[in-house]
Length: 235
Image (cartoon, rainbow, N blue to C red; front, top):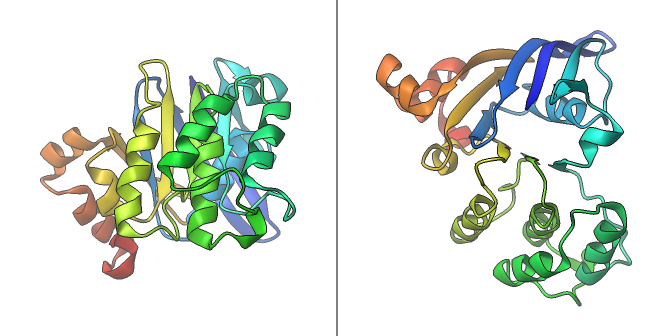
């Protein structure tokens, strides 16, 4: 479905992504794990054509990513990207203008699940509420691939469960879902495959159950082993 082959991206002397190759299959939920600066965001942005690699290629159904693939790949960035004058309702109409697969009915349902209303002003939302709004508008698309970059940041523990359940509702057999995060505990129980990124490289990737059996360790334990510490990164 979505694959990258020897992708590399540099910014000046800094290598953000270093010759990464991987393939995403439909019907799978992926956790892209790693601390800040490990290359997760850059990799996602290249997957939707927002950033161009220095070398290597990203393919969607065998073709280079571009205008056509963006119609079927939904990306949620970490940055706020709505105009301050917009209400949550405006955000939905804005997305509806851009994406043919956007469902206003689904969006309003997700807003309610997130305890948001269409009248709320984007500029007045807290960081946690803004995160919920971004998730709602992204998941209201009927995409084939969802790339969610740090969707749980700024969201309290109780709200995370609601968000994760809402996201998982979209996981059909023909859909691939990627959740980028450093909140390993939250994702281990719901994902199929773990992707560990470290310093721009693919440190490890595999089916979670197979990793547990082969390594004899939980994903949290593997995270601590790969990155050399525990602490807040696994909270």
